Amino acid sequence: HRWTQTHGFFLIMGGFQVYTPSDPAMPITLTLDDIGLYMDDHGIDISEKDILDRSKGNTLTKFLMLLQVTWFILQVAT
Figure 1: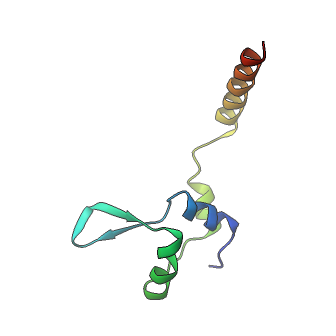
Figure 2: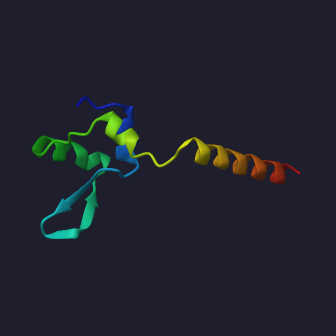
């Protein structure tokens, strides 16, 4: 798959992790410096749709968060 801005944000947030045979219980989070080397050796095949599918926020939770932030700003302003 071609990399998109979504892939870049996912990488910066620490979304790509590698499990090593030496310690499978402790994954290594790939950083911007590591990703090029890892992709040369192994490759990463994940679509933008797969990344967006893992988003935990739905419309209701986003609305509630917006409501809470608005309430907080009003409280601070008064």
